[in-house]
Image (tube, one colour):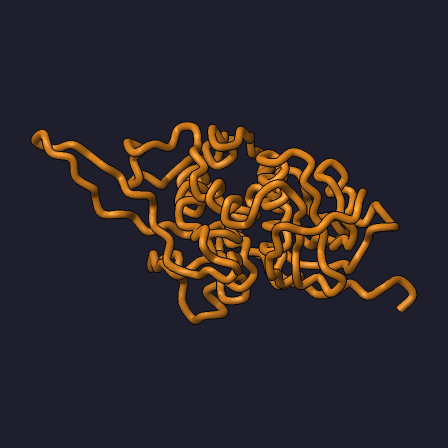
Length: 278
């Protein structure tokens, strides 16, 4: 632990579990690009800081350019119906960093079912990240698959891009995700709405190492900010409030069902956990 000057600062809503774990994802990628990176939250939790050898634009550019094993220009983007086994298959990053993601066997924090292709969603969210934004978590738009190029009659052309729904990590979507909240079922009508690609992709990355802390209630989970610079190896302990000298504010959220079949879920906004004794 040191007192470094941050080279990266990102605005964050600490009550949004998607944004919180996206911060963990930013630090994960930063440490792989610039080993020894350290991250921490401001005292009020509304800014995440990273001290590393690069800048925010470089970090977001690396995230945007991620290549995933098995996802190429020839991948069939029209087939999004996977089996439950496919939905649990790991995602392998090939470049510019090598990383294997497979945390979703822990079903209490998983949000998707076999009808969602985790590889294609990951690729679409990564490709949609805007490296020029100073507030990457504020980016919100309809997300499409990366352009797919095919050769027909000796000519190369780009096919129409398919819209891609997010993982529902961003809790700004959660309260309006269930049909009883909006008066109809967006899933049944196959509606596509805007998403925050940086939050969705980086949260997927962050949850590989940093998991929310289970509570006595099903799918109700806790996480904690930390306010001093920490290296990646000890951050998971800080997230679970196991480092008393570093703990900031605790938050509790629910991974709630967003479909009548109780398969698909969404992260709900978190509430601060009152200090012990209050």
